[in-house]
Image (cartoon, rainbow, N blue to C red; front, side, top):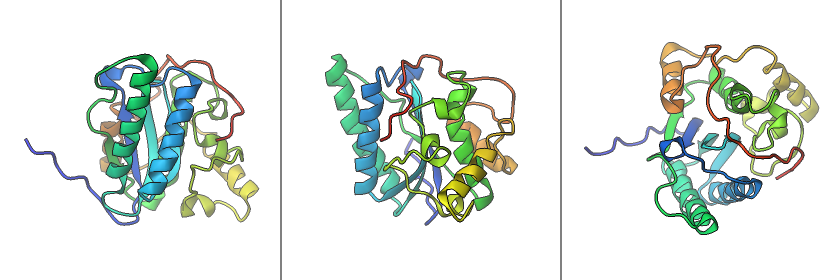
Length: 222
């Protein structure tokens, strides 16, 4: 069966999820996370994709992005995949598939849900019980969006910038979003898109996901 074409809307953000094959580990050491982010930055710049939020877990990745063209995300992910898989195969003397098929992508269906998706992404390490607060996970954009640690990879979205007139005001407003219990706010169809992309239920109290991460560098700025 032919693959369905990716859905694209000009100027619309997308939530991208990529998982390890059979949920296997994709990041083994801090150097692996750092290499992935370096190559993500290069690929995003080359293919004109703005990265607004991200989290790297041991066996999967979440990105919130806005492409400048219909082919931007796919071109970025292909370039990133080639360089990262080659790195992992050489570093760990392995062969075979690293990622689980095609990445998943869902349109962020309206401005009202954009910040909720940002929060959902950056809360992944807390939901997985890797850390007790989002700033304790170093491989996440929360350090930029909520704590003021500059990450050059990040392009702040206009909706994030509207949270306050100064950077300090924006961060304070953004951190308030993390006080309430985990919740992705959206209509029924949008929530089902998020569930399909992430392969997990949302708006529940169950904990999920990845409990295998290795040691972290808490104050690293990329």
